[in-house]
Length: 66
Image (cartoon, rainbow, N blue to C red; front, side, top):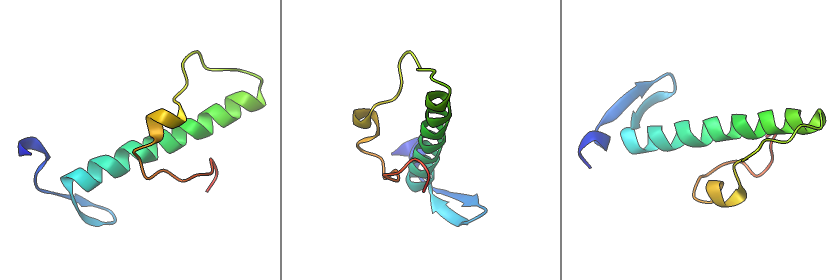
């Protein structure tokens, strides 16, 4: 409501502000999961990684590389 109303023009067409914010959030989270994957390959562990619970409400791909 309020600040989250309206439409955003994107390279993939006009998007409702809510949909745009949701996509931006899960897309960034997906890239963060990929960074975690690379860190794991180097035997490095983040101190406070995002969890499945953090991602539960997002329409994020199940696999890290999809």
